[in-house]
Length: 266
Picture 1: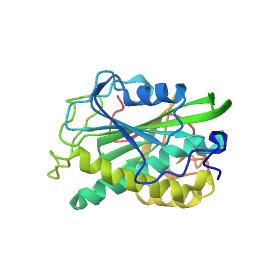
Picture 2 (picture 1 turned 30 degrees about the horizontal axis):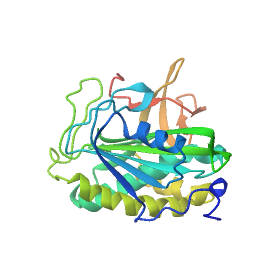
Picture 3 (picture 1 turned 60 degrees about the vertical axis):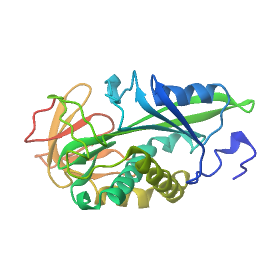
């Protein structure tokens, strides 16, 4: 890869990639996108002690108190647009790797929920939000920009009834956000290298499934227009969720939310 040409992809991410530290920001994802629009190539980490308008999937607010990790990674042309959604699985593995490195006693309790949450004993402890823009002019030509937003509940979690959450301190394994960021910089670089702009997704897919929450169990998927229930069988080569329905048919879920059948969805 030609790292001198911004139209030929981001220079390979390393554990030494630069970091912008902010006390307060509306959203680390929003700040990363603003910097990309201003011409920043990346890779670049944007980290904030607090966010005033942090957000999760589907426009939900992400509570962002001091002590938790709020970080976004800016990547310019990380892969062809067709495979860029696979970044959710790459990032999920990197977060799982970093958290298990710092909290090895919870390794068996930490599982990845399709498509991009980290659970601890079945309850959300971290979330990932991938955002991007296509055709952004950097270096005089249009390129795809991806921002990987990561929020980890290190010492605090919201008191939510609809979407229960927990944190590492509550689970008996307090993690310092700065130490988690250091670990995440290493694990993200390693998983992106393994992914190889989509060429290595088979390995990523296998590793993700080995850490998946609810694999082989009954799940309910809430889709934009309906709900379906079935056994979580796999994710396919595109990262889509495969449910085996009671009548034997396979339901391919491209976008939606999944819940264990025993749990009423919010």
